[in-house]
Image 1 (cartoon, rainbow, N blue to C red):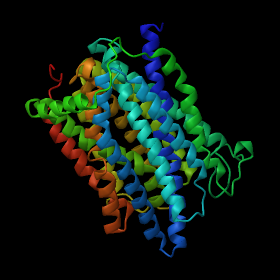
Image 2 (image 1 turned 45 degrees about the vertical axis):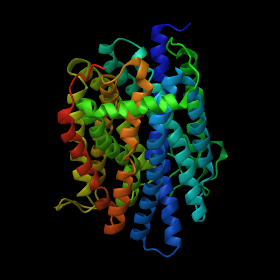
Image 3 (image 1 turned 120 degrees about the vertical axis):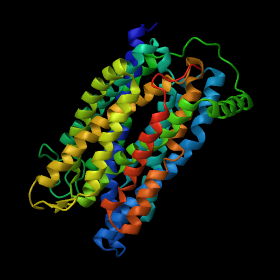
Image 4 (image 1 turned 90 degrees about the vertical axis):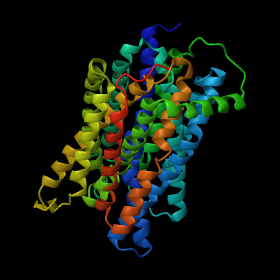
Length: 455
């Protein structure tokens, strides 16, 4: 029988095990690698370099948008079903299989492929992404059973900090021993990728898929050993009753102004943050001409600041509540987006820089540190704010609705980026819609009660 402390640590291990999907695949290794592969394909098809970069970013954007639509449609329904049966862990097992299969298959995304290769790259990535998001919903739903209400902010922050530490370690291992520089063929240590991996075929970088899958399998062991279902009576599956419960919850939103405002606010700011994660590496590759190694170093810096800020933010959440933590984080992220939109290697909003100097790189490293810090704190505080608007008995349904609010329009950011990129022919201008989305989220936060609602 696991102790209460073991249950909390087992719950932390989900963040540790799953974080590499965001860190390695979405943002810093596979995402930029996909951009290189897609750019090569489009240039081979006759596009100019800038047009090829924009086309690669747009393809990635539409893929993320489609995966997000699937999550938005199914998340609240599955949450209601899980609460109706009183079983959550079985869903974590099921979607863990999606996570592992999707990430493993990214090994087969080789450079020089045809357009089918791009399709399957996005399809397998989307499968794993869906698995990660759904597993997260059911894991978050277990959070209210871990401790009393006032401690959940610190627990959420510590969980994210522990997860970022795991993502940081995984990223360092990838950069030191596996991911090769496209020009030199060497890792960050200056060696060939280990295990005899073929540099020409980019096998070191492609190994990020199997590496992420194995990492997840190994580090989910403490979760499945120590985290158990809360003591509730298991009930037979009744899809009709589950859907009815979900419909009642949706109808009640018109009377629950704080919850409605929070779900709407998080819809915009979490969508914008996810897009910032998803396109950060692609942007650095296309606009600044960074290599996978440079982007990975950028990722290490962001993970360190995210880890520290999540822990500190958890303590601030416990003392001041999640609302001021969320608002501050959004303001920082808006500032970062303003810098990115106005930045090239030659200037920042008209202020000249020497393109041959390190100044543009240093500035973007600072942006990465701020994205990591603000992103970590806003995610941890968002999880706590959702707990303040639900009960343990309906937590999965509530977090399914929370996922819906994060995904129902999560095609919006990638789609807006894809459209803005296509219309302007500029990756830099393509990021600009995120500023407006963050601003809308910040304004809607005004109607959210700091301590949630009694439900």
